[in-house]
Image (cartoon, rainbow, N blue to C red; front, side, top):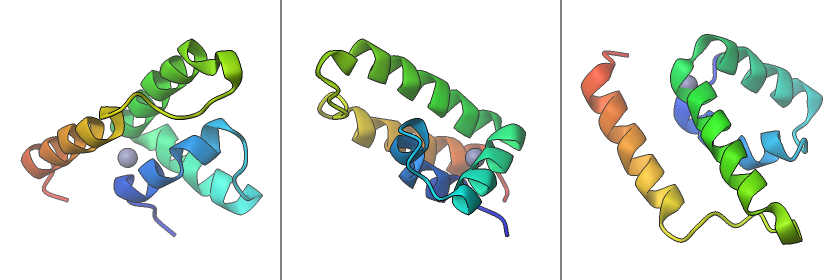
Length: 82
Ligand SMILES: [Zn+2]
């Protein structure tokens, strides 16, 4: 079973919070091993969570997620023939 990038993005917070099912976690992890885009997203998102983790709030800065997705969509539309 292959996971598309956009599906991985939906699971990023669960992945970082270690709340994914073992089976899903393995699938996401496998994707991350082969996808530079998603592994970069995980890295940057993790950094943001660390910076904002004072009260264990997992809300990203307003607009961050939307802008991130726009960037990713543009990247995928222009860079991948899928
Ligand atoms: Zn990916």
